[in-house]
Image (cartoon, rainbow, N blue to C red; front, side, top):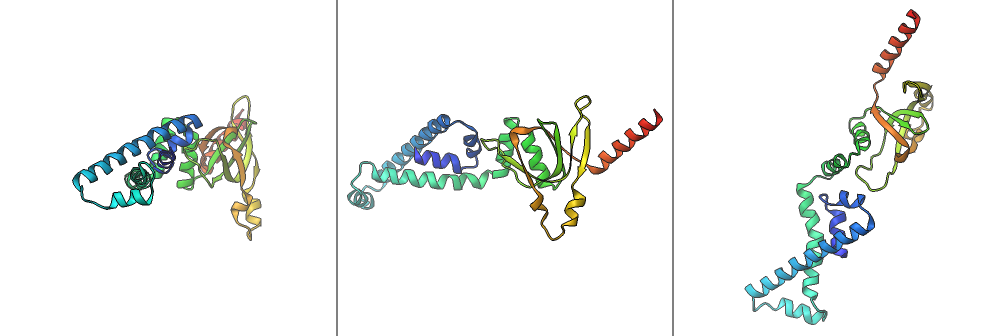
Length: 221
């Protein structure tokens, strides 16, 4: 079971699924994977002894460790440790995590990950109605629990209840620039993923354009 758990949590092909599953599911899958490794190891040992009947290694190992199936258990541990290395060569960690997130419909996580990879601004709207615009600086893509998101804010505001229009009320960028002896990450805030209602990439020029159009419309009215 421990060997199965090691494989499930270290192989890129399975670990992101395991992170999202409940404890009972992980336990069950670990038992199945461990049993599979045990059967594979037993067949490998039987094959070696059949092909090389005169070998002295296995008998010596059994004398050294007088435990039933000691050779098979050793091979089980070996296969469980080596298998993730083999599979991870063909399955990239980030690509696999992204596929799992897409299958589970975790598009907020995917968008935050994109904003980090491409160094783009992101707007996070919360249940409280508050909205933050800034640079996300971490991503726990495809994990079980909804962890916090760290954000270096450049602005904040709220979504109007009637129109859901973004109204920026505070500009942090000018304040951050004043403290030029500090790193921008010193101003970061942590937001629980469970509090995020929506997320979208944010473009300053597009937002300024809409504000200009809105002002012109109000003047005309």
